[in-house]
Image (cartoon, rainbow, N blue to C red):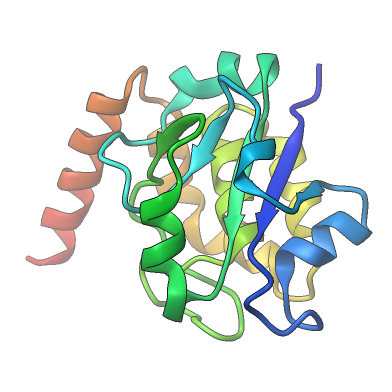
Length: 173
């Protein structure tokens, strides 16, 4: 089974640069116009969630969907705070490879967030296919492969947080 990818699009960005729209055009995801369209039980990628995304989210993704919230980082707080439907999950520490936020931690594009979740949940091929539609896309997987592999080895959200802490501690030494 392939995971169903949904993208809530808040229409806050330049459509020519929007990774969510591009994924939709390339048949890698379906755009949702309202948050009410998010299916019950779907895993929603939300960086302000208090629960970390982990491989344990694989089954809910297969049963319902994986949802990316596509909005401007400048207005993200409002969108992310208003997201209540589905199982809210925050991705662990990763570096962006997109041209706007290259090497910035956590500031991932919608496509990067979806690809990271797919990879961590064991859908590595789908993650690579997702990023293949962008010139810079394969760089995201390459840049974060060690981190993604470490997170993918975890069994739970708690383990992901522990691994993330170890990674962060090793970078501050």
